[in-house]
Length: 221
Image 1 (tube, rainbow, N blue to C red):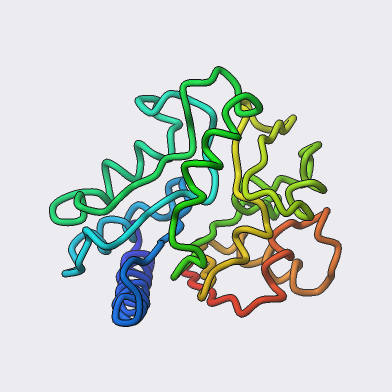
Image 2 (cartoon, helix red, strand yellow; image 1 turned 120 degrees about the horizontal axis):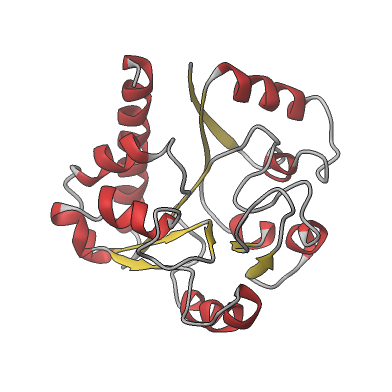
């Protein structure tokens, strides 16, 4: 990994640390919403070393593949192995899957589980794919319109370009945060973001759903 990406991960960890400390000075618990994939791994490792009252912090995911938590494709496994280490293991982590065989069957149970989290979140950290998706708001998903407009917190998603069904927080629920951060790396994603900023068709580039709220962008080549 490049030094620039490592430095970016450490800057992001410091910003999230400060945000959580600020919110915990005013409230009993704070919620951090993170994203999966390979980009956040160095950030997770950097944040895990921060001296926080982890027992007062709730962590959940913006979205998840509907797979067993032992699967290599599980975002929950990624969080457990890279963020919930050392003192950070004292955080309350709330995964987005259940024992149900499909997200359509499991979404209600997961919604109940996440309803008691201390919304609005202190920080929502989003990623973005080369197709402009964020969370599991994919441009080719049949459920995209629903996920962008519903008042429900979670949506079961089927996407032709993705091998597994998914569950995602809706855009409306992800908007319920004090701070939004986009963490991306690489010139290709910078180009996608630049393109997204020049138009307003959210269905083509779903990241646009978050460009209307203050969005801190953390990018490295």
